[in-house]
Image (cartoon, rainbow, N blue to C red; front, top):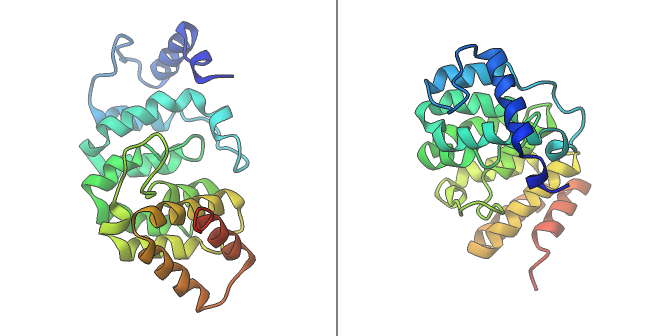
Length: 214
């Protein structure tokens, strides 16, 4: 099913009802109002977490407008937005919405993403990596990886032995992106990893990261 098949008049009506259930005064003609109040209400309508690493776009598609709202307005309260995205990503992707936060508050957000690399939830760990990709598909380039390279290294290094392929693929894609903009930095990260041993997960990540290298 294509995305355009999801978003139709019936969807809009059902979505406005869901918002109305947590915000009785919600204006169904627009999404105006106080950002903090809106986000606090959205916390209550997220629904159950995904049970597995897959299914993000299959089960969580209806949350896309909320992610877009945070992407556009999230810097009105970046710390609240970051907390919200930590919950959103357990149901739907937060990789696009987190990038404006990283542009405006790179050090603070990356410090929190470093903490996320240790989270037991696979979607949170994956977002810690996916959000900082230089060349995330369907998104503008983001060079926080180069500007805050030490923090970037810590994020990827903390995830280099992650047992879940969902996370491994994201870390490998980060390296692949980095090779296109600064191959010396990509080689530097890999050399650091290899100097301290190599796991099966790390080997796969490196191979995936170097897939376009001759």
